[in-house]
Length: 558
Ligand SMILES: Cc1cc2nc3c(=O)[nH]c(=O)nc-3n(C[C@H](O)[C@H](O)[C@H](O)COP(=O)(O)OP(=O)(O)OC[C@H]3O[C@@H](n4cnc5c(N)ncnc54)[C@H](O)[C@@H]3O)c2cc1C
Image (cartoon, rainbow, N blue to C red; front, side, top):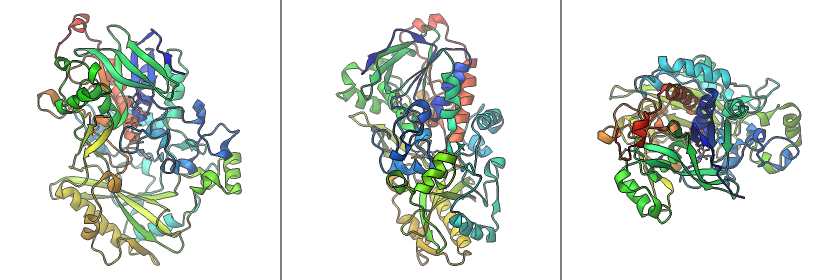
């Protein structure tokens, strides 16, 4: 049943409970402020009374989101879990991406800050936040509680080739800057055999505070604003179980933080009359929002949706007779009893390991003809065309120069309008150089057979044969659309938010999530997003509230 929002006001309203939202909501509430966290999706983890489970989890406090061996279920049955308005995969449940992802977790390389981020967000500024994040969310490369790693034949065979080629084994989060010719075990936020992360750390401390509130099944339709001053958030009740109406911030001093993800945050800004005119015109013409949209004289013209980015994914496949496949998909409906027993009784065994048996993870770096160093993360998993196959995804990340664009459709769905993959010669060169290098390294492995590319195919022909589309290259690591920077997007710059993460042209609207990243991270991005949210909280809390005389101005522009 939908219920009307109460008239109570909040110092901070945070929209979206993903990697960015959970962390910033907790940090803001730690200051003693009242915080309302809005999540449009339903509950997920058993810790928070989620209910979606495999039958063997009935009578336990676990859901599909908690058990590492079931993390692949998102690719089998995503109804009611994946966002239905984004066109690309994203989690729309409590926790967002960090409830549905593979929980791979890396301390960022210093270049992830120093190359990508503006002043005030460099590695020296970020260190204490990264440390804090990793203290609250420890990383772990042996997820099973009995201290064992299971079915490691793939890891062992591939790393033989890497060893011969001169790669070095590292404990990845002890050596975050060693990202060239190094390899590691897959490293996760899993503790006690269950998904950990911000749902089991930041959200726990936040929920223990009396002035913290969480409303699930409650979407934000748009912010309510007069000029650049936001007074509240208009709500959309979801799943017939959330809140409706409008919820307001504390008059004069309240703030709204948008943490709805790369697609969701851009969409919310568009619906709030903030973005490029072509996109705002789409909203204006839409049957859903058109008649009630904020009037055109209040629009704020910013490059929302631009600078879209993702890791460029390129899959190669090998096989080796020693590799042993485990049917994690079968673990949902027809699991092996010994494995569920080991998991349920001791949080041990193969089901404590993330499906589909990830690792090794390895790294290479490539100097481009444009003088830019590009980082590649290679991610192996036991899955492929045969039972002895392994897929290794090459993720081209930090240093890429290609960018795309996200836009909004008349039905108010977000989509990738311009693909961000391999638009520059040097990005493509890095993909090819990396593949050539790893092909020769893996040729050192006795008994290894190439499935794709075939041993006779040239790397260039192979790379050219894969379309540069999200379906073929997508990595689900979307960033960009609301870029941070000092170059104000209203006057020709690229930035949507300033160095305090405040949306240009507003008094009290902020964006804190993957969408503000100017460039791609070296590894899977969640660790960096948590750190960004910690940093943003510090900067937002240090900001003075706007002076009252400015608040009353209806059409001020700043
Ligand atoms: C299948 C998959 C696997 C992945 N694997 C990994 C991995 O192993 N390691 C890693 O580091 N990264 C991984 N990622 C990426 C990572 O999860 C994301 O980069 C990260 O979660 C993005 O954080 P965010 O805060 O920007 O947005 P999200 O985590 O997407 O959170 C946004 C939240 O906002 C909510 N929301 C959206 N619109 C509204 C609205 N209008 N009102 C209210 N709520 C709203 C959404 O429901 C969602 O909960 C994976 C992603 C996917 C989809």
